[in-house]
Length: 266
Ligand SMILES: C[S@@+](CC[C@H](N)C(=O)[O-])C[C@H]1O[C@@H](n2cnc3c(N)ncnc32)[C@H](O)[C@@H]1O
Image (cartoon, rainbow, N blue to C red; front, side, top):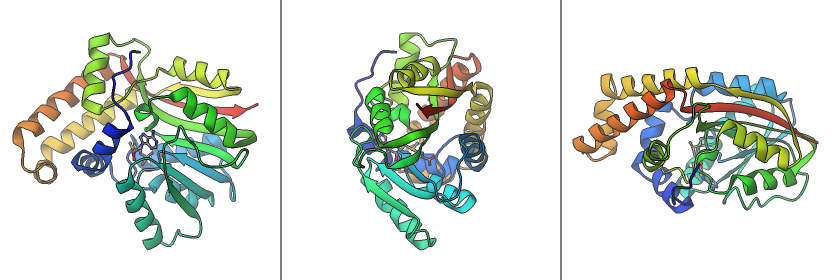
């Protein structure tokens, strides 16, 4: 799918400002579809065990790592490219008593700062759609993974039914995605970087259900809170509702989706 021209700078503007706060309002601290339940399914399928070193690429508010530490006894490391998310995650990690188990660094996931063969698991939840160079992200992930390590992630993807260029452009413009990968595209990148695919699932129906849920929450319950975040701009609020309705239509048609992929480093 064609690249949109958005870069990490645009993504930093999203997560450093009101849009990022809006996503937290509708999704909670875990800024991904399905929250706790989705993380539990991903962790169980990935086989996360006590003491494993897990690197969350695009760790946002650190909620994924707090989840993995609490429920699986994992040792957590996070990397995120937006300073507001890094400082906010560090604050919440410290306040909740996770400072000894979780470390967060600021940086671009395509320039992974850790040495070779450091981690048992690479983790990602609904975030790599914001990364321009997915091949670099995966090759760097492979480098820092130990032999037989696992990469486990969910992401917003182009659905199997495929988007036209103008449909993809409209979603990328609203979401500020540099480019959207497809599930098959991810499989190809992973294989080219020496991974063996264990699970590759299209979660499209669940994805559409959640987009509908967010539209309902914003229009039926959280309008006051959302408007407060965007400075009371009703026209913007309505325009955003229109873009979310478009995403729902694309999701229901199987053109826009979400994938869960788990693979092993050979
Ligand atoms: C949707 S949020 C991630 C949600 C998180 N995985 C969770 O489940 O709570 C997207 C995050 O990706 C980060 N991000 C996007 N592109 C990045 C990049 N190239 N390098 C590092 N972080 C990036 C943003 O700063 C933002 O915090």
